[in-house]
Image (tube, rainbow, N blue to C red; front, top):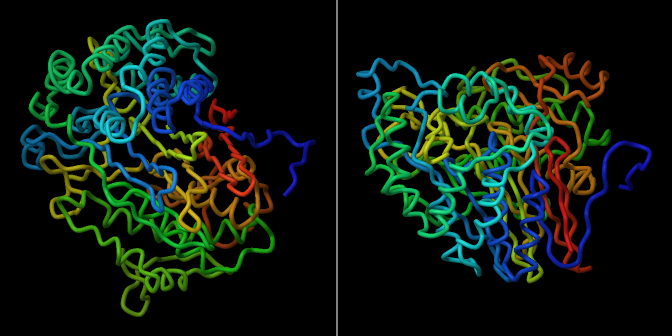
Length: 537
């Protein structure tokens, strides 16, 4: 499709050498600087995400987790890394109940798992990087120590999180100004984080997981009643591990994801369900297209809440949930003339028996491709700041349950259900697109909307990211719609039986780089819902 130059928006970015797409311009520029200085795509991704941990502090940080898919030139499948952290060794439902905890809270120390990001960066860098980690962290150190202007989307997210930050003394002191979030253009300085990054640059991940930095994080959590110990953090230094990616064939392509405990499994389920339908003639913003996607998501998120957990501690039936026959059964439940009033229990598709996160991507001039995501989970994570270390701690443990017997029940050294998922598309054994869509629980929905927009409906990479989004909230059941969806489409969805509700903030934010190997061209896009951009050379 040709772009309408009368309409608001921007063109996709094209280049013939290397390219990066991130959610902040300075991070994109950092990635290109690394590429032009001889680093590979993975080096550039690490340098860029470290910068994002400083300049987009509500979305990500070194106190968070990381997942990565990396496709070296010539590889027939990507390398996958799980850099998600684990619960403390003392974390059990009984131990929490003894402390008077009857449910997990997103701002409590019990929602904090040991961060996995720094372990992940070091593991990836040692295995596949060209440049030393200490060199890659220098741009982030400069941003932290010299400060960086707050951008519009960052400012909006910061303001909406001010209440959370006021709930913790250290966070209030360091991340608010006279009790309020900094405004657009304020040059925000994080000297404590800069010192911590300098220590990691000099001594590696061990400096983060042992010694005074780890001691500060543990003391901060223990003072709030947390169960964490310095031994928990010391074990976290090696938590990152290479894992076998999972994939599904879809429209002549192979789409890859990291395996559970991440929710990439559910991208594959959605593609498997929707891939069996004919493409709606009315196009990507039609009620028919959205209706099918909503219904498929309702079924898939039902499975997520029942089965997704840490496969090192419980059985996650990946093969069963991605079996073509099972997905065809789910597809058969979807009708174009009405929404499902009820859905079968998780793992079932038989009505007769039952009634019922920042993302970035980089491609270098050699053809290496990196799909990389790093997150604190909710905005500013737990809101708990280890002040001396300058580390804002994630709240990934909020993804656990206290329901004993549930696959995702909290347990010692267990990883929680994870929402952050890098994606990669391959064709005939070659990577053609690293991509991802941020947004917490929205991510499987967001990724599949994007993939269909581009590969099925023919929108270019940038248009496919721009396209209006919606999401059937697992919490409320209402379909949360962006303002860009027309009233006739919303009216039709309502008449099909969907409860539609306007969403305050747009859904997620994504990046993608299409590798056109035939022409030797890279085509990048960056989501307008964020402050970032794609650039190439």
